[in-house]
Length: 221
Image (cartoon, rainbow, N blue to C red; front, side, top):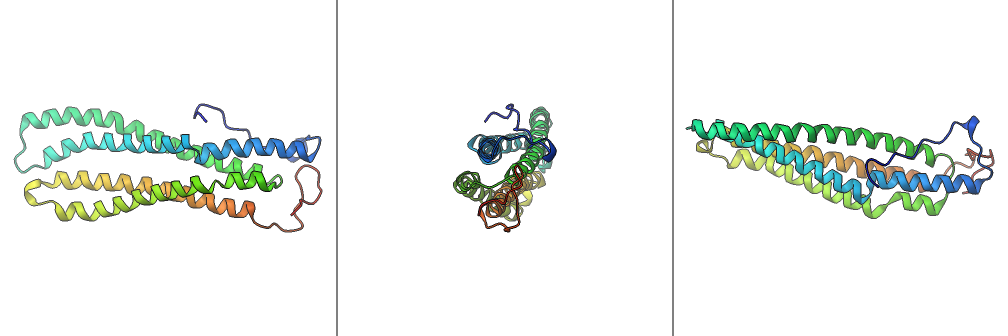
């Protein structure tokens, strides 16, 4: 699903719901849950997740050229000037990438809220099983966990492997790379774990007193 495609709206308030029968409610619920699930964990969302990550690394890499030049024990003015131009380009990439990443995280929060609202209307095991998306959840978890692992390793390896002759700019650049990996990985892990918990609640047993949001009749277990 394209990020420009509008999100499915939240379900109408209880007093305005007018589904003719439970089958109609389940049909609308299935459409909304499928669309929201793809927007949250789908291949397109995963691709954007990786694109924003690569843009962050690209922007920081260009900024890092200037840090390395300035941190050199014997900085060359001409090299520093060229690296300053590269850093300006890096800022032009890094700042929009941060903004896009933050916006996507906010959009994810809205998607999760609407997903929970539609799921609470009723239950339908085939639809609920699809929304769980176990394969995609595992892909998100493994990829994000790998990012966290690489970021953690770099956080220790870079300071330990840089000599005094290399300058402290290289340490600053390496720590920035590690931080981007770590934070991006943590957001992906949180997404995967949060969706897994949602899927467990969605597909697990519910209290017998739970009632359908459309007709007031008990939901079938």
